[in-house]
Image (cartoon, rainbow, N blue to C red; front, side, top):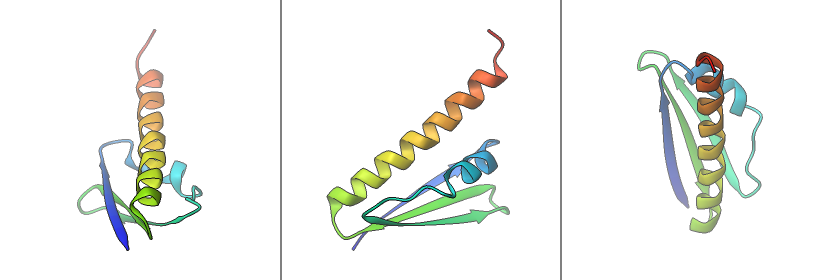
Length: 78
């Protein structure tokens, strides 16, 4: 079993969690653990193969990046 932990911190952490709560990875297990005391969100991804783990990590990292960029665009005037 292969495992990766992505840790998200910062002011958009609650938005990122709500955005990703319904997302799944077809060949990987996803567990989200919120740590309010650390102001952190851990996304734990497990998969049977390194290729499936890589694919799931790439997807979640892209979604996190998308939420961050959308937040920046909304906060920054044109």
